[in-house]
Image (tube, rainbow, N blue to C red):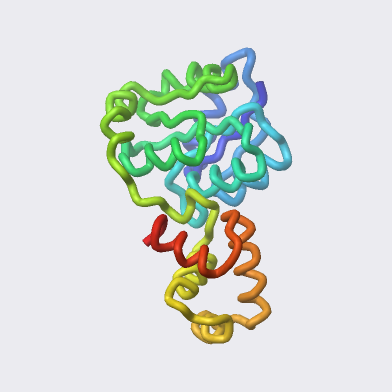
Length: 207
C-alpha cells in the first residue's frame, strides 16, 4: 500500500512515516509540507491513501483535498488534525474525504488507513458521536468546498454586486481579458451558464 504524508510540521510527518512504515504492508512514497505540495505529490505518486493535515499555511488540507478530488473523484484522502472542529468535519464530508481523525489517537492511524484503503469511510470515535447532530445543522458552504481560491471568490462577489468586467478589472488591478478568463474558468468549475447564475449561486451558497 503506497502512502503520501503531508503535514506542515516536519517532525510530525517523519514520526508518522516511522509509525506507518513499521506496518509491513505500508510504504511511504513521499512527504510534503503544504496543500500545494499535496496536490503535486498526489499527481506524481498516485498514492493508495493520502494522509494529510488540515491546518496548513497557504492552501489548507481541505482546499488541497477538494482540488485533488475534483480531478480524481476516487482518491482516498484521510484528513488528520488536532482539532475536532465541527465545521471542518462537515466540510470534510461534503468534499468527499474518506476519513477525518484526530492526531491524538495516533494508535488508530494505521488501522484507519487500512480501512480507507479497503473502501470504508473512517471517523474517530469523538467525531462519530457528533455526526448525527452535525448532519442536521446547516452549515454555510465554503469556497474551498468548490475548489475556489481567494481571487476567484473576490471576482464572484463583484459579479454578484453587478459590476462589469472593466469595473472588476479596476477593483482587482487585473486586465479585462484576465477577468474574462477567470469568469469562464469559474463558470466551468461550478457548472454554471452565465453571470446571472453565478450571482444567484453566490447568494444561495456562499454569502
